[in-house]
Amino acid sequence: MPPDPSPAPPVHDPDGFSAFYAAHFDAVLGFVTRRTDDPHLAADLTSDIFLTALEHAADYDPRRGAPIAWLYGIARNVLAAHFRGTARESRAVARINGRRLLDDEDIAALEERIDASRAARQLVAAHAALSEPLRAVLDLVAVDGLTPVEAAQVLDITPTAVRVRLHRARRLLRHEAATLPLLSPEPSPDHALEAAP
Image (spheres, rainbow, N blue to C red):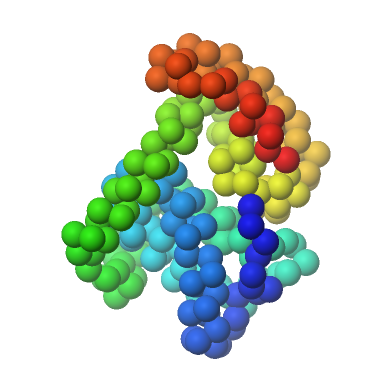
């Protein structure tokens, strides 16, 4: 993961938050496009994540970790709420106010990004048999590039628990991925997963 260029989300500083948004937009959009293949939904969810971050900028505690880990924690909550269906009405006004209209070029760029993330989504499909706690750790470390300490911050568990879950997830995923035809022509996922911190 690239070094975090911004020390903290600024509070009560629209210009500063604009720079914070620009510094972290690609990382947050990447987080979202690895989890959805709809460009409009990806734009909506990314907007929701930054609106939530702006609302909670004062809650950021630099002692608990890097700003990107804080944003990924917000992103996990926003995506989970969306996919449970509980956030649709409560975020409707924010979407209408925060969403800019997408032109054909925007949609094409998002579709390219989604296509580039297709392999990651296939790997996520391979670990659908894992329990949610194992999937959460694996996603944050192997897919999103967080360290075990940062993943522990996002999940509010100990780094040791993250490492244990990560080991179990990798072992189970190797077995599960071996049975998927879409992944069999590709190199074994062992190398990519073992390279994660």
